[in-house]
Amino acid sequence: MTHTKSTDFQQRVSSEWLARALEVLESTHNGFSRRVTPPKRVQFGDGYRFEFVEKSLEQALVLKLARIVTGLKATNLLIDAGYLLEAATIQRGLDELSEDIDFLVFGKLIGQDPKLHTKYLNNFWSDHPASKQSVLRPHIRNYISNVMSNEHGAPARDIVRPMIETYAIYSGFAHASSTSSMELFGGKPARWRLGGVTDDNLQKDHRADLWNQYYRGLLAFAFSARAFDDEPMFRQLVAFAKEFSEASGANYFV
Image (tube, rainbow, N blue to C red; front, side, top):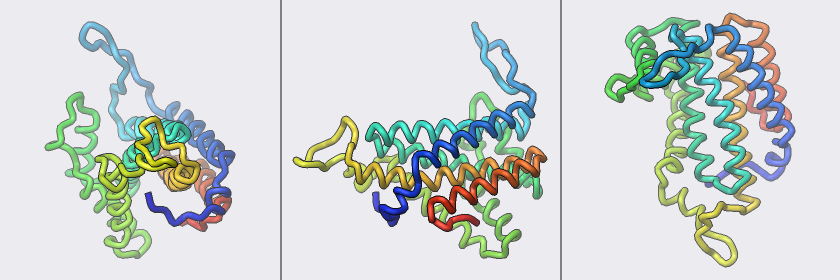
């Protein structure tokens, strides 16, 4: 994995800040989940399961946001254990979750495209999601980039390009590209490290790369606060995201 982040950057993104971010995300999720009708126990085959009967957009957000929290936690565990490629695979899922949340929130706040949002939610809530009935990833990205272009004046193509590039990088890990998989081979003496890559420098690189997922997760939660009509929570989350960014020295806040 090739990174441009310096050792100074890695040191500034302390475990304390990451832990604080997780606490904020988990606490905020608990608040959001109390604002929707909770899942109900329903008959399923010979047993039962819990499900959101109403199938609202806000309930979909609660589910998506939960996976951001658990995805970040799982990625931390995998990096600590040296399973760096598996952690990067989860990061592709985190990228998609952030896009899905933006797509849903913008649809509620700015205006739904019935052909896209209704189709997306119908497939999302289906017991048998089908690829032919899903909204394709390029359509989700195009919707997001067009909304952001209208809001900020930047060309939509410049907004969508980083989404595509990031997805391509993490797809290499998800599909075991030759370049990403070669991280398994190394050490002194060089060998296949199937029990985990406990190379301190590589682990630091992957952990530093994960910072972006924390930051995007904070923004996804902030946008969702507006979907829940909670402007004070939106401002609190944006303020924390700014503080989080400044603490890293990345000057990444937008």
